[in-house]
Image (cartoon, rainbow, N blue to C red; front, side):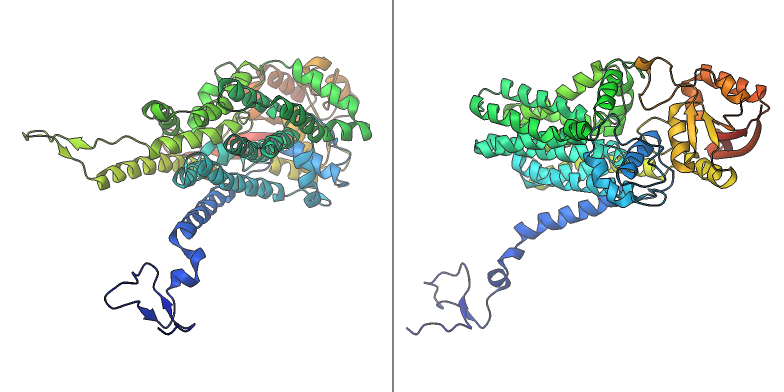
Amino acid sequence: MSRPDAATAIVPGQRRDHPDGPVRRRFPPPAAWLPALTRRRWAPAAGLTAIGGLALLVRAWRIDLFGFNSDEVVYAGQAASLAGNPGYTDLFPVFRAHPMLFQALLSPLLRAGEVGMGGRWVVAVIGVLTVLAVYPLGARLYGRRVGLLAALLLAVMPYHVIVTRQILLDGPMVLLSTLTLYCMVRYVQRQRLAWYLATAGMLGLTMLAKETSVVLAGSVYAFLALTPRVRRPVRATLLALPALAVVFAAHPVSQALAGGSNSGRNYLVWQLFRRPNHPMSFYLENVPTAMGVLLLVAAAGGLWWARRRNGWRETLLLSWIAVPVVFFQLWPVKGFQYLLPVAVPVVLLGARALVLLPVPTRLRWPGRGGPARPVPARAGRLVRLAAVGLVASTLAASSWDAVSHQGSSTFLAGSGGVPGGREAGRWITEHTPEGSVILTLGPSMSNIVRFYSQRQSYGLSVSPNPLHRNPSYVPLNNPDGWLRNNNLHYVVWDSFSARRSPFFADRLMTLVRRYHGRVVHTEYVGTTGASGRVTPVPVVVVYEVRP
């Protein structure tokens, strides 16, 4: 029998004893010469690409609608000072309360000129990378289907969308914590020392993004303590802890070399003795709705209806949730974005629950006798698909509403930009002489005014007690004296600080009246009343004062 030439090939799967013999073709089928483009390979890639595009869309939509909030201007100002930007070096110190990993990443974009929206775009891209990183984590834990669904849920989760549209440390920190969780999963599955050390190193990087992520070390400990089947190597731990310490040491060492170690100690004391800023019910009132109530119900329900399948995977994810929740609930200082690391294990558990949603296999139709009839497999798939669509669509609708709103006269720290702050700061730059000094109601608006106007500003409500104020803020022990001596030239009132501190709002207005204040500029936002009409409400008012 002659050997087939190179231009012909046997069709894969064709029996050689076929009556007609091997089928010869002039060219091989596509699956033979493009093996990488099989459905198993390109379908997840195409789905993940679409999810990444959706995640970028909701994070980038009208991202510049409002200016930075107080935390954003602090981190952006730090990055600009670190880059040597002359407009910010005298107004924002490099060393403040947190490590500098993200600020160092951001600083090359902020070397000169006014700081724009580039920082928000960097965080938005980091948020998309976190969505993409959830896929391999979910695929390792439960398979590709759960990985894709978990990525989709995180892509449209309002909690993650809102935070990753701001220059905050929590977005980069969650990306690194997700990679830490992935390394931990690989260690459990492979039981190799390299993955154990990688977990420690990634946790150190996570702490360099934001030091409060040290609580995740408690999650790792809780998981190992609750899972006796997972090997807990003592010698490896003795190597892993120094690896974590060496990575995180970049923060205190850099502070010491730059002469900022005293600032670091002052911030630590301030953090330990800060007064509570929200009631104990703060997270319960704000975080579940931001994460999605239906998603939380699905995650909890999945732990119940798939309880026979629960094992080390669920223990790991629940440990990643429980330790941060307990810690930040007990911690007196609370912030909207503090529980963001919990979002990743929540979407993984929610995706698992939706994929394993129980559907009856046999049903007895009402009004019809006889035995129960089997339910077609296609019907079960449709039910699960409908459940996925319901959860994902409600998350997407909430996210779209959050990124498309037109502003509000109220503000929750960490939930978005501050309407009117950027515009008021720029007005001050254009209409006041250089060297003007501004008095604001609180330190938050003081940061915003200082950032956008590049004028020195002070907050009236800053406490003279060092234990009760941020070390970067300078208190005015005698604002009357400053105004009498013409050391303060403008006063800025804002509705956001006034709602938090009515006492200081009254005191500020007393000073305005006492020193002949007159309104020189007002920023408004439109609010919709019960009748449906849009009414302008003042959110920032600038007064000129004189002795």
